[in-house]
Length: 414
Image (cartoon, rainbow, N blue to C red):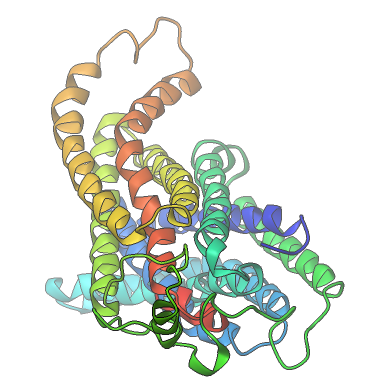
């Protein structure tokens, strides 16, 4: 990992702003779309869809630019612009949406909700989706540290999202109001963009390539470099590896059990699908437990993201150290299923019994203590599966990315 020591704190601030937007948008769209559960599901789907599309498109772009930090600063400026526009458009669109909702049949109203949320949320989240592959293209230079460096970026940004989710849901909206919260997020984006542009001016640019150049994948020369996600063929080794075998040399320490690209992508897609299902389920369950949907969503999202941050860091470190990242990925997915399944009886059987306990209802407790104790319970239930889910991202990228010169494309695709 390279660059100014200020870049990681700035990426943390960007994560903070991103989740501030998400919580605010859900609060505002719950009034527009006519139900918090509907708003949460719709915004989450649009939010994640925008991230996926932006990651894919802008990851490719990152591999073609000479100064990825400048591209990243442009993304932050665009996020600030759209972040400021979304609340204005939501308020302006209330009469239009009400008229359309009365005009369309009941069965088509769900589709209308999705279209409205997509039009509002997709543009800024598209830009947000490009931030990790673009910054990863600048930071990650050596494949033997790919998991650790990329997992570190992921963990730092997610930790910022933890702060954004918690402070927005429990402090900022109540004390500052929605308009000021939006202004804070926009200001953070502008600050990050300005600081990154200042840092970019101090970075030397390698001629004919990305900033600072990039090292080829260990053991693969430029003439035989594979694509970022080349399909693996069992039993067939790269030419350099075959040459080492004929000379009696040992395999490089970075060698691992390979997975066919299509299988790896399917595993990651199914993991993401299940993770969002857990998120929506836990949000609805905690709504009953905490008694307020805004606090329930913030508690769920804070715990979910905190687990992702810890898991992202741990998964990144382990992926560079274990002999078989693919085998570790398999065990992680098994444990995700086991721990997630265990939350069902805990939430629906244990929490109702705990609701009237002395721990959750101490004599003379204030509102903040009341909410904090419930947050601790949610944290204890959700952290094991979310920590394991967080390990998935660096492991998949460590296994799947073959060509460091196309790292942005690889990260963006996965």
